[in-house]
Image 1 (cartoon, one colour):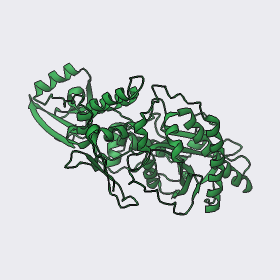
Image 2 (cartoon, helix red, strand yellow; image 1 turned 180 degrees about the horizontal axis):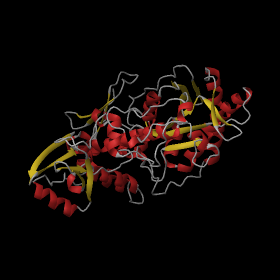
Image 3 (cartoon, one colour; image 1 turned 90 degrees about the horizontal axis):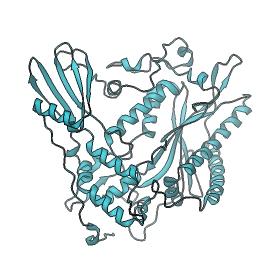
Image 4 (cartoon, helix red, strand yellow; image 1 turned 135 degrees about the horizontal axis):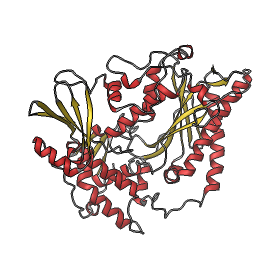
Length: 488
């Protein structure tokens, strides 16, 4: 939610825009029950530390996101003197829906504009049995080995087919998104990899060329999944006993591991796997490869990438129940007909804490020819359709002026800047230039960043703008002692 207002100061106008996170259900849950959740976690862990530091930091930074009293940027129009104050964001990795949405758009735009050449692409979705997902959530090195094993099997299949087609040195590559969440706010570590439907090859002069390959059939997907399952089962057996359960950075509360499974009634079992196109299920390992994008549809490719980088949940689906619990509306009904997951506030925070990735663990990984130091990467990335300076893309610019490898040779190249500015991102998503002055339609620019809270408070008081900070409730006695367990 947003609130906008303005006040006259001298000959100019000062306005402010801030998101009202305190008006959302998610913010109310965190503000009212965070201290209770942290206190219970400290009591339930043997070492008394509670949740890992990065989890607590994520929640506390979310409480400061979008609040002017914690700092802001001043945007000024030199033509008419209009000023606007924009609150800082928390840059959270999982909890904050606004910051995660910005990261999603930024990542997809970067990949489409600078990394992925014009080609047909396919999404390979790989998931593991329930019994391995908690270990993957805790063990970063093991997770990296799983990703390499998964993509190694797919790359081997691509290179083998390319050699059969007469390509001597095929180069395969892909971009992988690690998702820690399921559709019912449960911990579900799985992977979405976007790979070209083909391979690249280098000519004698070092120029890259894309060679399309036929899409996989159902038998090939099953064979790849079987190969991955065999290798990973052996790897998991070898890794037994290697994890350190006392590591403060990776410890998970025993009761929170229940969020690995959806809410099922007593005695109920998960449904049997339904056969789908280009889908395989081998010993609990699942591989799906039916989502594809045409080579000339860069907009669809960007949507597919946004899906891989999307936030863990939508805060708009959270509502309060008359009993004081929180209901999360599912995107589609569960196989039992269930449409909502209803949880006490503290239990909701437990589930959300598992969705926060550990520090220094990348959620987007580049493999094969797209890896940073891969041989041939520079030549392959040179095939990306040029779109000019994306930071100058305002309403009306789609950022995809060229869609073929031939046009890429004459199209203007993108600047060295690695990421889009916040204004360019806003224009790309909403087709609106936020740096256009609302008073005179002139050009606005950022002239100051106020990070000192005392200075920010003084400025807000002078302008007659609100300076209050939403209060965080103190820890309360655990309500779980009086809970009644409901089963259908």
